[in-house]
Length: 120
Image (cartoon, rainbow, N blue to C red; front, side, top):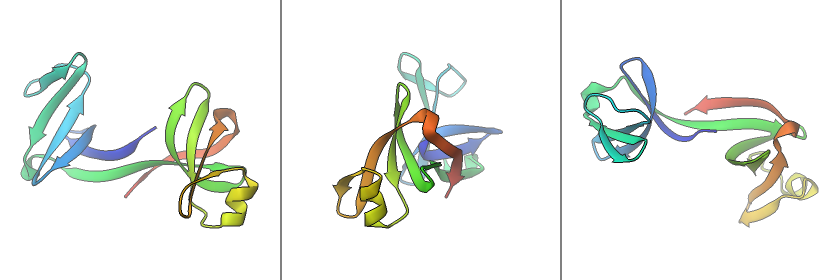
């Protein structure tokens, strides 16, 4: 489940973190120009003219007929945030009000429909 920046570089997508004008990209294998920051985690800093595209990717889905962002995964459960904007619906679904007007909850992965990645 992705929820964060990605950069397209040399025909591949990498998890990324903007860093001023530059961007840090992360990989799971050693490669030329990457530095190991911890076992199995490698980073490379790119200049703006070195990569093709930067985008924010969110994993979206439908649960019980309503729209959600997928925030996390634990075993066979997904942490969801409701994006429908209707408090009565959020309460009917048994969601917690995480912040004012922000409703979240856990749902069985088997009940999730229409799972997809949305690029912003």
